[in-house]
Length: 245
Image (cartoon, rainbow, N blue to C red; front, side, top):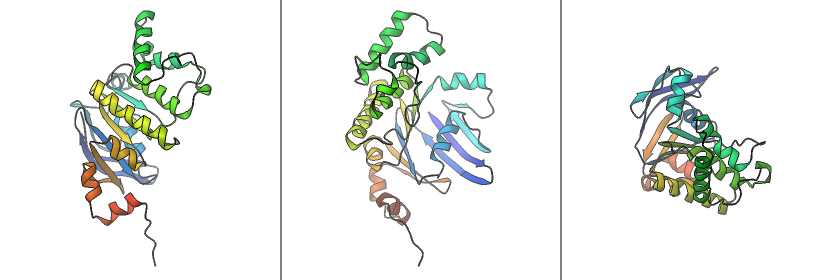
């Protein structure tokens, strides 16, 4: 589904990505972990052309996205949904208006079909009856669900999640993790999840990639990550800082 080769990105004098190489299989969930400020969100944004790399190649379903115009990128982005941190909902729009926004952008105008699609996705995210509420009246977990509904409403081939459980309590986080899994199984989507939450990583990931010092330091299954004796990986998993003597 997605292939990344030799990806480098600089922001000002700082080199964020130093040669990222990774492939993401269709219908699978890849979780990207790493330290804060290590480039995870930057990598996610380059995958859909929100940021342009300094070097490297990105292919989505075999098509390179490097150097494409905004018009050309728009066609690629229709294949990819994204859940931003906090949901990024439009405050002045109701739940149903937020979810319907991508449908209108795609040119769908039939009110009956739009209502049917919204009803279906509200059932999937377990928010039936909430369509008239404004974001200000939603909990953090509900906002994430609505943001996810908006990302999936056009049934993209891939969904990108930027810290989907950030700021949520453990019970709500678990419900979001279960929803991510359910969407993968129901729609057979490819998922890329950026997270600091290791419980989430082990719950949703088919594979986990550890981004360390601008490169993919580890890429394997959750079991392989847990079994690793590498001190750098172990330090990250248990949250241990190395302090110089």
